Length: 156
Image (cartoon, rainbow, N blue to C red; front, side, top):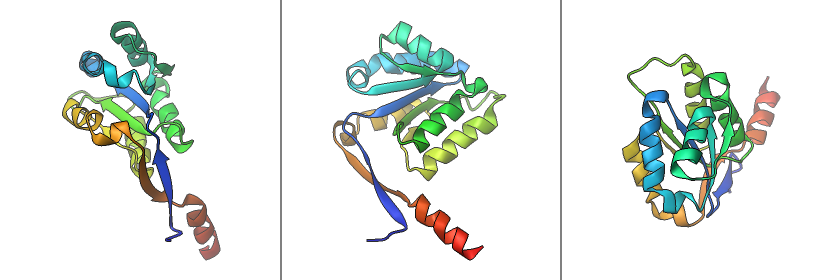
């Protein structure tokens, strides 16, 4: 067994973060309505206004964090590191400058580091939500951070 990696398991019941930039919120809300029967079986998390709008308009229970520009993206990233969030749907707006773009990039980076599925548009979200893995556990390999830190400390 390679000690450089450890196995993480995404359980059958997923912890899904739902995020959308302002111009994309209506698309995400409609997507949530379209996939209500799947999403209602999972734990949902979201940022600020997006989570409120999903709860009000799609009728889904969702735990809300701060708005993205006020640290919500960073809160979701921290939940990935803590092992809480294991799936992200983020309808981003590629045509509008975002004041919190560094936070968005940091969230994307941490999702990559922890090998978290992340959809950034409707097509990818549709593929992920209808995947066979939505109904079962999924094991994936993630860097063994403790070993990595120890190895780095030993070489400095």
